[in-house]
Image (cartoon, rainbow, N blue to C red):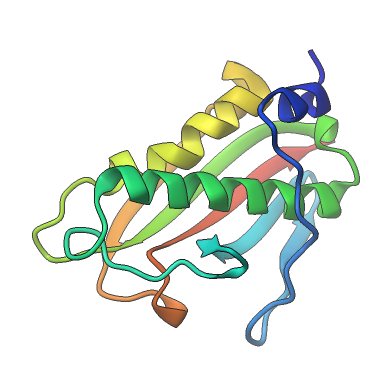
Length: 152
């Protein structure tokens, strides 16, 4: 099954690349690698504000991470023209705005990781990953994720 068919089956339409909020570019391609800048969680077009362990639970954080994965795929598509050119999702780094005693950052990040596996398949979508708890994210967002992909 093609990637576009998987996206359609999941009811996902990819958004256009968001305009950067500061002095950076949305992605950089060097050789066969594409580095995507961090994308913050958004809900209804605005930053999805909250802190895990204070006013958000793990399940809601997973939803936010999944929403970011959709945005990241939109940026990746803009970078390479067609997601079928993705050979591997290499690395995902997730920053979770969380209280000092919240310890489920890895479960929050699964919202993105599992969607990448669904869309790209187990081989291409499987990736190395880091998930960190941080004191704050720009604009108060609950989660920020960046990605590195290998492409044709």
